[in-house]
Length: 349
Image 1 (cartoon, helix red, strand yellow):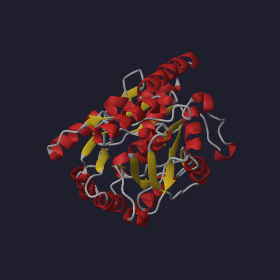
Image 2 (cartoon, rainbow, N blue to C red; image 1 turned 120 degrees about the horizontal axis):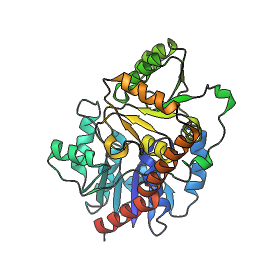
Image 3 (tube, helix red, strand yellow; image 1 turned 180 degrees about the vertical axis):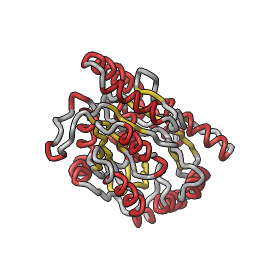
């Protein structure tokens, strides 16, 4: 079976690529093809190992003119990805099966029309959460073929694998962590509000920005708060180590398919504070993996953070062990890759 992933699969900080790599690595009996465009040194280093597998092949867009594929599995909704899907399907004479794993893109997002196209193109439609499945039913009148959650690299995002904090970061502990793009949907404004309510607590923000305008806007607000540090985009290893030493992850996002950052934080035993919206209730369970709090009550968030900061070492250890066990049970790659392999075989017997 020949499977095309029309995405730059060697970007380890790009959450959409993770499951595709893990399926490929666990399926040596299939042939996989994808694009290569590493961004970070980590991508180049890990990419050398990934592309060394004899059943995994880098290709270019122009190669789609001369090759056919049995399965085209896509997650990105960029014009380049959708064009590759259409071209590969045409090259197969309409026999290739198009599988789309859908996350959550709201109607007011600039790429929503591309998301619509991605859903309509799919022969097989997968949702990463029950919330996404319901939103697809409401928006498109279509029932998804399966719900398969995102997973996490549990051997990598493991407290036992973490390193001491890089001294050059010059962080003050305890600190609260935010990992996400600086854009309105992720609600970094909530984090900055909490920083004003808890001026003696350090807040660390990690992530890029979709636009220079948003980056500049949030940078100005961050600069006015002495207890907030913005580290920008960081390699996975740094994010893992930051999670290992953080007091909590604050994740006030408005809408999520099934956020990998939250799964990784749970795997690290880190309590997560989030809104009770979209798919977050599927991940954040009170007292087990974190707490769901109304976003219009920042004082409640601040109070919960203060409680977490005051935990004894035994309370923190107990929480971390239970959260980690939950992640291992529900979000390991072996189980998730196995579900996708079965899906490929059913789609193209």
